[in-house]
Length: 76
Image (cartoon, rainbow, N blue to C red; front, side, top):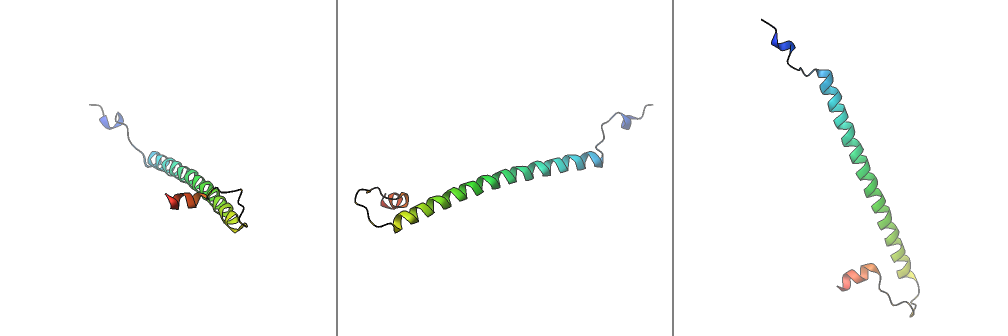
């Protein structure tokens, strides 16, 4: 009688470790990408707020009657 254990695929610990490491690496790369996206969005928001603060600190100019973005939201 033939030994069936030789015919069945076995999962060696090395195979598991490689797959596990690859999965962790993929997850870390996804998290890094998401972090970079959030960082860019935060930097853009910071620039927008800085511009709004600069505009708010300018002396009134009657030729510019456009409300700031945050004022538009508040007035709605």
